[in-house]
Length: 279
Image (cartoon, rainbow, N blue to C red; front, side, top):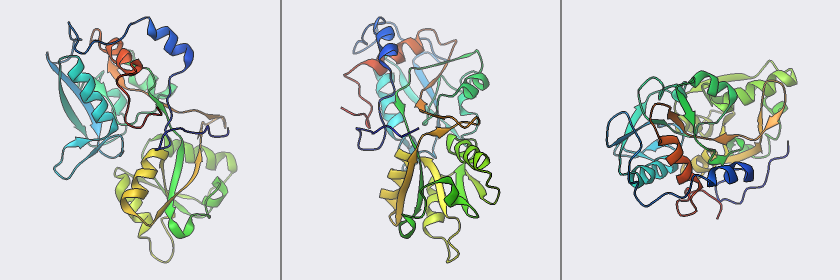
């Protein structure tokens, strides 16, 4: 699949289809403050599970506070519903989509790709919001290697770092298997900034060679750290070899009556744009 061109400055594009939007418009537009707040785990509080390893969507600042695009948007959403935003820090990304059903939080966020496998894992006690973005896969390499990674074959015999159980993890493994490449070493991380630094500061052997992640995250890290190039933007590859668009959605606790409906209205509202959105 040829990646669609993005109109946003961060390589992300609006992920709501015309048909889906038309269906949800019947729900109406959000008011500045909901007359009756949606049900949540704790009255008056919106608990949001967040993982700090996916800037610019979700990270921690120098004071240890959660910041990022997902955080800003959901803070605004909480305020619109008369709720207090409360982050719930997750040490690992793996299974964050299962946390609302387990009672850890009302919403799970942090750049979660909406895939059939994750919907099954999250279970019937969760609902998924409308997609709010579609993101491309990409790699970070040293600036000197900017022209040395354009396809999966260029990872033959090299070492690549990915976040465990992320879409990047599955994408690279699926591509390697389809290409019959068995000599690539995959290292797992829970800190993508540390992974990017490892690539940038690699010894003369040039390993690790690359970090794989989302295009927006790669662009952010390259800008923040310097000495890195963003290469090979591409669609996500599934295990059957098909290449697909990759929407991001938020995962909502199903028992929170009215919450996913309110969130969908907020996503659709033209007055509440996500920071990286095309305008």
